Amino acid sequence: MNWIKALAQAELPEGAQQVVKVEGHALLLVHHEGQLYALENACPHMKLPLKGGKIKDNAIVCPWHHSAFDLGSGTVKDWSPWPPGVGRMLAMVSKEKALPVFPTRVEDGSIWVEI
Image (tube, rainbow, N blue to C red; front, side, top):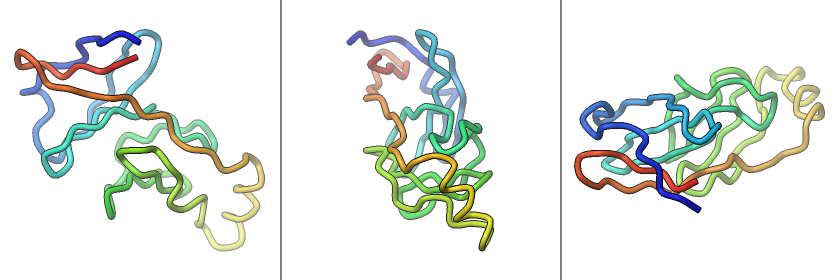
């Protein structure tokens, strides 16, 4: 595992989301309630981007099918609950799986991600 400089800390204010490319990964950096999170920017349900997903109860909610993932661990909090009827059918397309997350740290005014 290597620590890679991802973004200047000033470019990710509180409440912001930013996609960065790090070592072949498209990562979504999220600054929520004073914490920094790095998540893969592809919902494991249908591989659609997570950027713009709402943060609710310390989870990011996929803007496409509303699956919810814990920001810190990537564990599934809710798997494709919407739209009613169709959500269950879409959930069967792919098995429930956690969202990959990456450790972060701030050093020298930059956000670093461990890959």
